[in-house]
Image 1: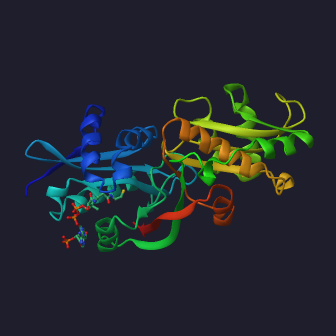
Image 2: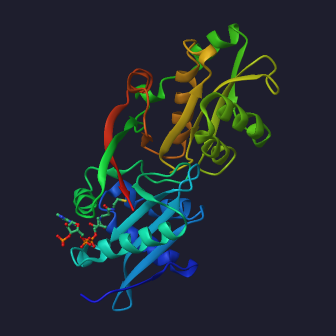
Image 3: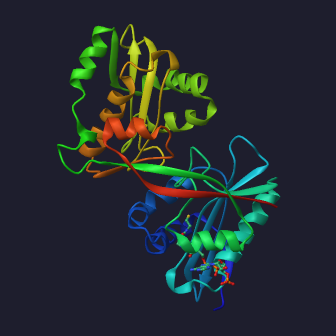
Length: 305
Ligand SMILES: CC(C)(COP(=O)(O)OP(=O)(O)OC[C@H]1O[C@@H](n2cnc3c(N)ncnc32)[C@H](O)[C@@H]1OP(=O)(O)O)[C@@H](O)C(=O)NCCC(=O)NCCS
């Protein structure tokens, strides 16, 4: 099969989204193809399209790590099912690696580049991609997983009311509410100083945006009080939850469970039936507070260039 590879141009994006709807074999990814491509394209990076007989047959998107310019990421690679095993995936990844090297990368990860990522790594059920990573000399270095919370029925533990716990917090002078644009600076600063730089971008991207949201807990004055914790959803993908964090000094008061379920309730009201708690963290916390279970598992890969 003859194919050609060209740089991705803005006008290719609708065709790339169409391609991803058929080439992402997992239904939950295919359904969010438009949001995945849009989110990944918000960061500077590189992209290539493979064409067969004038039709788009494959795509790769890559970027440089936001914290380390010597690290490149392959953020998405997908080849149309009828064009697989012809070397298109290999050629696309090769072009992306060369472009990332040109931008200064000395190694490339097949792993998410937060805050602009669609997956932490390769979902193990994308077995051809796991095989391709191995064939192309990538080494698996970490495992990551998501948890699923069922939002499809009113009695789900993920939708348990938060009011009793909120009253207990109120008795301690702690208020819980949804964030507005006015909270953005303080929240980004809280995320940065308490948990490091990695979550600041996702926090900023969750506030006051359609399909996303953030809830926070404050002590003292409702508007200017001390932030004790936050939980966000919809930043990386509409159906995904996270990140969330409670200040170490405020842990154990029940703040996290309340913030988590307030976000899950909002996702439920948006029509989402299964929330993906992304790139977890504390499994027992989510199991206890939302009846969530480990479902998606991802292998993360790296290769020295
Ligand atoms: C992963 C994917 C992009 C590979 O595209 P492709 O064009 O078929 O890849 P290539 O033909 O270049 O294959 C390169 C090597 O990978 C390995 N490989 C790819 N698919 C394989 C499969 N189904 N079984 C075993 N090995 C496989 C082989 O070693 C292959 O080399 P070979 O054919 O000479 O043996 C494609 O399967 C795909 O789009 N999958 C769905 C989307 C996806 O999983 N994306 C990754 C998550 S972001």
